[in-house]
Structure formats: structure tokens, C-alpha cells
Image (cartoon, rainbow, N blue to C red):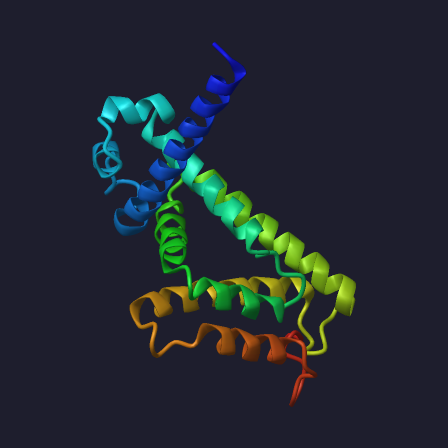
Length: 203
């Protein structure tokens, strides 16, 4: 078999994998892990279930590939915030990617259960995001932000706000202005506190 034929077949296989992943993203976003069947994904791309298993040996393997694909898409879009204000840019881009926002929201909620196939992925993702954001805030502001909050607390707050706003936005995209709200939160967290230090314990 010539190298040209081998390359052509690899290219066709890669295109088919991407087609399957695109269909799987939509199905997992709509039905979650439990509500999605390999048969449905296979039917959408004109394959039998056995044919799909040639590309992804199990439903769990397909889920892992979908999550990795989402990470690749995030990286390509530059979704790696370096300061709190950068989170507003991330959510601005997310408003054009409703499918991926819903995929994240549905699977991260399901993944809370310890034995869910996505549990370790989301556990590591959140820990990594908190750690990176905390470190970036500490490099920029030291051990205390102008608002009086510790970097780790500010990081947890903005990540929680993003998740909550994404959920509300999925229900009511016309009323929930995610970028503006995240920008407001970033301004509050990085501005001097009014009327006392919110990070200080009450006597």
C-alpha cells in the first residue's frame, strides 16, 4: 500500500472521528451521559453502533474524547484567563458557543457523583483552574487583593460566578448579560473595599 493511500485513509479516518465528536457533543449536551446512547450518535453520522465502536471502543471513551475535544477548542480560542478581567472575554466568546456551554454545564453537574466517567476530569479541571487563577492573582496583587480578599477566595468566587451565570444564561440568554456581570465582579474584587475589609473576620 502506497504512502499516498495510507495518508488518504488516515485523513478520512480523522474526518470521520471529528464528525462523530461533533454529533456526540450535541447529544451529550442535550441528554447528558446517561441520556445519550452510542446508537443515537452512530445513527446521526450514518454508522451502525458497531461501526462507531471502530473509532471509539466504548461510550466512556467517546465521552473522554469529547471532553478532550472541548479542551482543544478552548485552547484554540485562547480561553486561558490570566487575570479576573480576562474571564469577561472568555464568557463573551462562550455566548457564541451555546452547545459547548451546555455540554460543560450538564456534564459538570452529572460529574459530581464519584463514579461518573467525567468525575475525575472535572475535579482536576476545577482544581487546576482555581490554582492557576490563584497564582496569577497572587503574582499581580500579592497575598491580598485591593478588595481585601485572599487570591484563593477571589479565584473561587469568580469561577463560581461563571458557572452560575452560564446556567442562568442557558435558561434566559436575552436577560443574563454574562460578560458585563463578570466584568462588574472583577472590578469589585480588584477594587479597594468600602466600609471595611470583606476578608477580615468579624469580632
